[in-house]
Length: 162
Image (cartoon, rainbow, N blue to C red; front, side, top):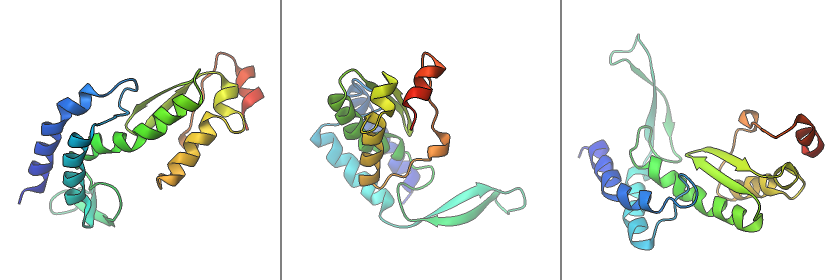
């Protein structure tokens, strides 16, 4: 069976409904039960076995070299992970906005932006602490070295940074 072709078909089948439900976060998706069941089955079929992870290599016969075997998440290049991963983030981002009402999140896949008062985002027990704790519960390990902060003034950031 051509798995990439099948997963692309599943992505195409569900993409319109998923896109319809992109409110209010950009790609933090709230998908109803019927759509989620189909995606869940497809994603499980796609991820239920280990898959190779490859990188380009000009010296390899086909131009790719297997560097390891993936045993978590979606397979490299899967058409489903680009719509299933945001579903995982959806609850975390929406719950964060409910807990911190004068705060906003936006996400494009794993790039999450936090908007609001630095004291609410960075303060102890703030939005960032909550998101990181929720990511940990979902077994997500963010790369803290890639985090960036933008504020209206450097003083705000210095005052609130841990």
